[in-house]
Image 1 (tube, helix red, strand yellow):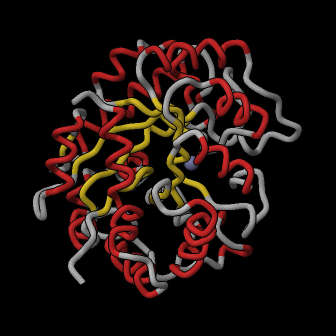
Image 2: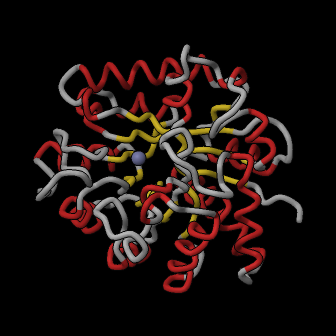
Length: 315
Ligand SMILES: [Zn+2]
């Protein structure tokens, strides 16, 4: 089997590098979820790298300072990976068989965006906005909030602004009341960058069948994670578990709206058979073994995400 080029919709690369002791640039990381050799072995060609802002930073000044810190570190620590903020550049990198992978950005927890110029963010490759992490912020409630509410006034105002700036909204982590408001009202593209499915593990972090159907109806992309804690009870997830999640959506909606958002760098625990980024092609093999046509496998492994990004970023 020649490798299927991989595009990953959610990678916590910069957090991963900053959390090494001491913090290390990518080429100096020898093991773990994300390494230069692993990306090459897994045929990872493109990644959406998250600027993840922990809820402890939420608030005026602190959240935007954290975002600035992450953006500065990204430039300094991720060479030889290639920033690619135009559709044509992204596509060229994705189609190459060798050479370092490319990346663009999403913000995971957009509290900081209340004090950040959105157009300067787009120039730095950010065109995907995940409104919350697990807690509540000034915009909305995340998946861990008990009895969550919908979007707050600042959240609705920010949505208006990110739509005008040409962003897609990432629905991951958003509690259900806010989720449905965004699905119904947001005029731009929708993504779920890293998720599991409630039919396998029933918790607010995961998508219900109704939510998944609504995202598909809106033309959105749903990307399955490798984070074991949201794939299976007792963290007992494997490559077969991920394949089961993919297959559930594929049986309901086909494969055109499916992708992968590993969340590598952003979780503890292990998905057996998908321990790190070098193992992506084992998932392609698992899909082929279940009878998926090659074009569908190529779509899930990366083509569908590249088409989504190609429509989102300037030509
Ligand atoms: Zn996350």
